[in-house]
Length: 236
Image 1 (cartoon, rainbow, N blue to C red):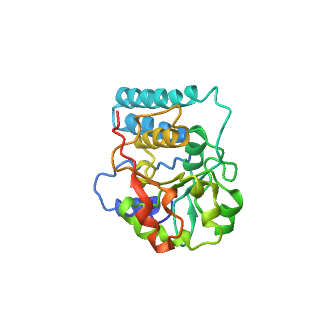
Image 2 (spheres, helix red, strand yellow):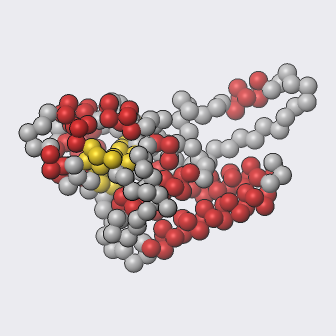
Image 3 (cartoon, rainbow, N blue to C red):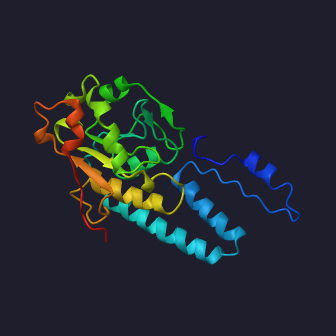
């Protein structure tokens, strides 16, 4: 993870030096979905729960493969873009680019496993995303609403294909923030948003808000939060 979120291994080792019985310190640094699965198995191994962790990973792989399988015959892969930060703009790295690709989107700018990075608005503008996902780091939808107006003040915002078609989504970052089992639920959410003609029933209530583009005409940037509506589809 980024240095704001991760626990420094050196600091942990220093903190446990005074403990009479030295604990085993396990350092996990997964960057891809496969490495997340490997980390889960490693945790199970050191905790004496190998069977449980392997069973969990097996179920996560099955869910991931279900997404891949249903997309096997798809020929249309919309251009997608994901933002984890606004002002400054930040793209999510590590497993996020991979999730976008596995969910059936075209995302050619950032390879799986790459670090998060600050970008310029021009990069979003030139990519002309057909679907724009905004999942601000460590934030729920309320914070998304407080910050989203900044985007509407940027050159070309209203000309983006995703904005014109209403394919802009605010997503609770909890489904992407930690390298654990919930990342697969984040994948399922992205799959439904990217290919609603194939997937349904994956999006929890209050997890996603969608832009209502038909109401944007004549509005000010400050009004942008008013045009997002809850994507209320029961999960199951």
